[in-house]
Length: 357
Image (cartoon, rainbow, N blue to C red):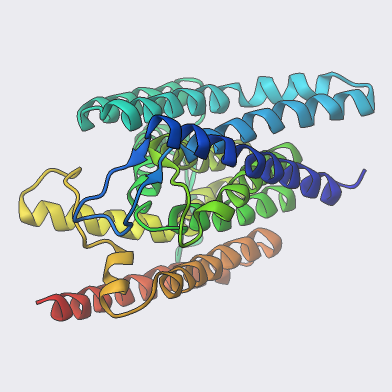
């Protein structure tokens, strides 16, 4: 069985399983009135179930286990599944725990500080197990530095930051799941191109789970993922890039990871600065995220998705092209894209503020 066929089967299985599970979750949510509450910050109106994250997580873990088990049976080599469990048990354990934290928050509205402490503990768990950025490429100087202490600190803030970034961008139908799905797709292609087949399969399974969810989450949404889904997705996308890569690519991994998730990162940095200036806690909600600004300009929800999906697609494709070619100028192009998108975000913020004032 070719590797490309494996990726198609893995992602299709996750998508179909999640698509089959969602109607059951919707009925369960309606029965128990597990709805996302309306308020003046949120865009949606009506009673929308908020437990879609359960389907994403269930389909992901189920397909991960069954796919590698069946692969072991087909090849009559059970070292396949044991190797995956051995190499990725930290990721899978951390993802399961972060999902539980998200579920507790969805149902019991945990204090933000409790959630943050849990995320910090899980990030430390990943680092203690030996997974952190170990070297960094410095653009324009064509040099690599390796400072373990710096790598540990960067990894800690990276995991906690990305876990929350995907959660923060989950403010409009189809937004978080679509952006994360595009990032996952190109992460999977990049893992495969760099020779890490098992990691590529894991990412494509996540992509399939997100695709199955997006069927019901695309506007007008019939289901939300809740914190259980967004925290899980953010954590997995944050941790996967830290895992093994060919030696020549490892120093570039942080730049590539930032590129795949640049839009959520940009929106989160803007939120931190904005709330810092206002003197309010970081977790204070508002209506000034990227999608709010685009809506303020008169775009429809689907037009907003088209803009943000296109930006994510462009920068993720560019990152993938570097993995394929290894050309240094593509790294410079990536950083140029960061600058351009940041400037456009600044102009958008000014324009949206003028519209709303």
